[in-house]
Amino acid sequence: MRDVQRACAVGATLWLASHAPLPALLSLGTTRAPALSLVAVGAVLAVSAALLRPLRGGSTALGTLPAWAAAALVPLCGLAVMPALPEEAWRTHANWWPGATQVVVAALVVRRHRWAALAAELASAAVVAALVLRAGGADPWVRIAALNQPALLWFSASVGVRALFDRTAREVRRYEEEAARAAAATAATAARAASARQRRADLDLAAVPLLRLVAAAEASDEAGWARLPRTAVGVERRLRDDLRARALLDEEVRRGLREARARGCTVDVVDDRAVRAGGADEAFLAAVRRVFAAVLPACAEGAVTLRLPPDGRAATLAVEAAPATAAAVAAAVAAGSPQELAAEVDVAGGSLWVELRPRP
Image (cartoon, rainbow, N blue to C red; front, side):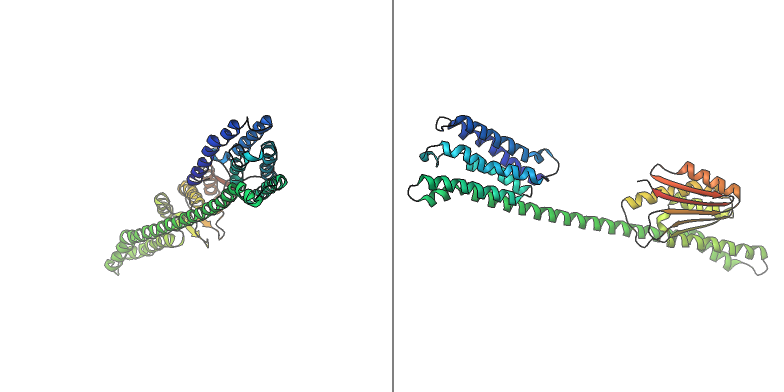
């Protein structure tokens, strides 16, 4: 229940606490069954308090059986109070039940049991009509309409309030969804800008010096020309990492990739997901990056591939290297896996396969 809805219900509660018991207590001398009137007002207060329990927080959901039991209280109060009053007191505060029980009706409507509330109003109207018609007198339908006025007012008002609450909830939900989409779009724009800056930095730090070396290389410098292809491959891999697997990269992972490749290790990072999501997905990716950063220093040689498969629900790490390297990577995975990740490791000789999944 939101704050505005709770404030409206608080108003109804204050009305109940200040007005419902008072007429019943003041009219004890008028009724022929004062004890029964006290029991009825106590039941109304108890049921109303139970129905207004969401004021203390929590869900407004209400079971069908409790709802219909609460609805039955409304006509039962009429049968307990009205026959014990003289006819001239029916249009006074001594006949307190048509108004006091409307808090029960309104609470039922707000808690999405409008049919039970409508049944309560129809049953109480039948009680009023039966007693007025049995008593006779002039203009019985006018008296019936006057006694049913609280029911008409409270039921229609509570239906309108429930509709207003629903519309407010829809508008708030729509606003929150739009805000979430805007935040996601802003994050995506920032990520693309960061990637573009990183690619420019890679070009400035690697590609531009490489092109200068090519331009300045002498035809007779065989050692220089032999180094150029290796340098070019390193630059190409760094640029390809950012284009193919941006979600798996951070500064620590980039540094580990450079150092592992400088040692002669072939490392590939691949993101094959069809949809890039945020929220819990980003937390999973951050944990995968921590594991990968811990693994790269152990890669002395061989081929290493970190991959996010199309479904995006797991990350896989494959290593083909010497048995010592595979064992070192397995130890790094065991030591570097955070608690939120479940790591399944399969190692046989120089072949290692690791599957990383979020813990349920």
